[in-house]
Length: 158
Ligand SMILES: CC(C)(COP(=O)(O)OP(=O)(O)OC[C@H]1O[C@@H](n2cnc3c(N)ncnc32)[C@H](O)[C@@H]1OP(=O)(O)O)[C@@H](O)C(=O)NCCC(=O)NCCS
Image (cartoon, rainbow, N blue to C red):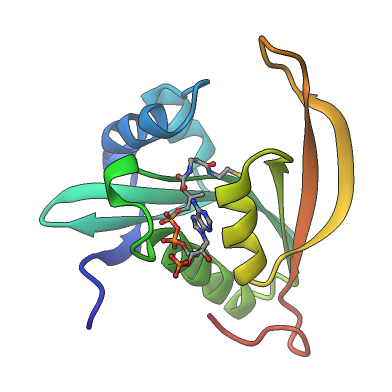
């Protein structure tokens, strides 16, 4: 069955729906202005997953020379587990590999089982641990640093 959404580059005009998706996905959400700033070229780049004019999820990257960091990835709660997160990661990886970016990095909370499962099936491996990285009311949470190899030898597509 074809996917019930399509992926396209995120533009400044998409910052308002992106802020809504971000708010639904994270306790500490970002403003429209923050999303505009983070998605601005030359470093910022992003993609959104759309269905019938509605933004269902998005990813933002910060590119520095031959490395890129996933700044955020969020899928609206009602639209999870239909492949949007994986498709956004695949699009970002494909774009990076074609632009001579050799590695994709990200930080994920140690307790974020859904995201960790997604990153694992998307080819990321742990390369670091940042203790107490995320301030939380219940106590600071650890972050794992994950990396995906995008070098010609390591990039398998997808
Ligand atoms: C993490 C997140 C982006 C996943 O998005 P998604 O669109 O639901 O993910 P996908 O449908 O593409 O999932 C692909 C695979 O990842 C794994 N996965 C995703 N969510 C999972 C979950 N809740 N439990 C277990 N495995 C999961 C599965 O292997 C899944 O394949 P399957 O559905 O065939 O089993 C989404 O849950 C989200 O927005 N969470 C809140 C924000 C967040 O934590 N972002 C990441 C910050 S680092």
